[in-house]
Image: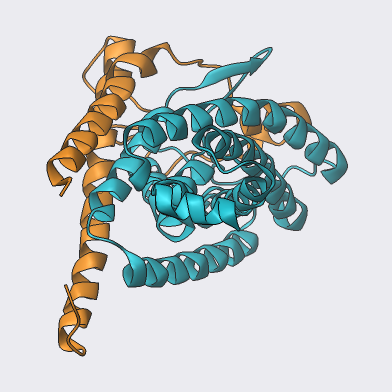
Length: 227
Length: 111
């Protein structure tokens, strides 16, 4: 999913850079306003964990692999604002040190994976949590399904960018079908990894899961049930 | 109250991330990822240009000088985990410091 230099033209990359800068600017401000003391090292850990798991490409179809994007996972664990920053840190380190994701495409990659996947995934997560029962296992399942959706959303964001300023002249209709098809498969892997990770953290330290803050104290839960 | 417990959680999480990067990443699939595959199938893969730091010491998740492929990938991953954690921690700690500075200069509030 990391776009290299050259796939998307300069003006579209600049436009995406503006979207990325705006999104991260708001995220930084919101995070600075709400960050709890324990969340600073936790957010660092979330970024490091996403970096590690992004290296673990899993096969999805003949000759194709995929890896975690992590936006939805980060949003569920530390909230969407801090989560977007976590993913952006990962993309920055990957682009600058590991030559993964073009430097002129950094704005595109941050837009797709740190903004679209994170906020889109978190919106899907909130919706699913409303539909599902208020339990830890349901919250982990909601995180998994939302994470799968977030991968497809990020792939659609790429297609939008390709439609605006893509190189090579591939018909957008066939690109969208291929991108959504393969990223639906990758989304299944993303969903499993995310649900497992959120499930483990909910089991060990439920108070550290931003997206399940309502499930940590029995008092809140009881009040909810009476209502 | 649960500060030590939090430290333990952070240490455990970091060990998991480091372990995955160091020991498991060398066994990851080397097939092209979804975007690369689509780009190849739809004929725009050749529009990719070489990365600006393609000759860097960690380019392509390898460590220059370590010939064993799995070890090279693993060590690069461990470096990446530590750098990402460090950058993330520094950034979020900075935001936290900025905020507490602002709190202190504002009206008094309960700790």
